Length: 250
Image 1 (tube, helix red, strand yellow):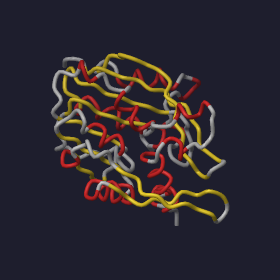
Image 2 (cartoon, helix red, strand yellow):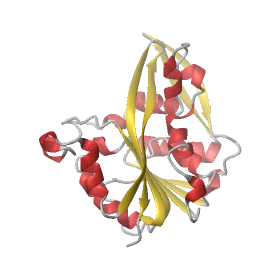
Image 3 (cartoon, rainbow, N blue to C red):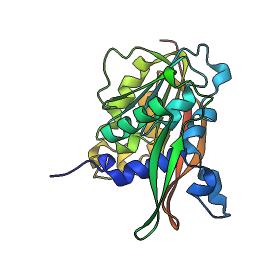
Image 4 (cartoon, helix red, strand yellow):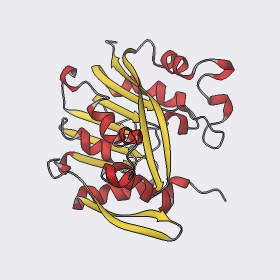
């Protein structure tokens, strides 16, 4: 029987370190990869243009994992919802909401590991944040609309990415912002080949853009590197294509 890798303890702790550990612990080398640390925070601080969002009442983080971007949104928005399909990730995020900390185990090499507590910044009002499990392709119909929606490194992990694209216009208020990132790492294990954006040789981003037209206008497109620590000498390093979109008037 196949199991969801995002329910495993190993990935849970990788993502806890990815979202919350200090930069010098995540990547203990004097190399340019340091700039790839802090990806979940940057999805909010760089991804959104908060000064040009008309209202800052509600924000939604789809595919929130263990919640770092969700908590960062609470610096700006009055109410934030984080949704992820992994119960293990949501349980960890809820413990962070409750206690402001969560234990994490960080592999060093072989059987040697290091324990640490990851922390939510005390300046963040955790009461603004709620987490729930949910499928990004079948979001509850009663979610309502949001002033900002994030979907970071999510699209190429969905069996039916177009199902999410079709739902997004109903989730973002006119004038609100949508921020997406994806490395477009299409894998048959996650997405059947027939559902990959950019089938037939088309550029994946152009297919993404076509899926968001005519409801969204592209505001900014840029590369955003990310790094996930596996152990002290092995890292997942990727460069996501980031894009900010403005919801047009219906």
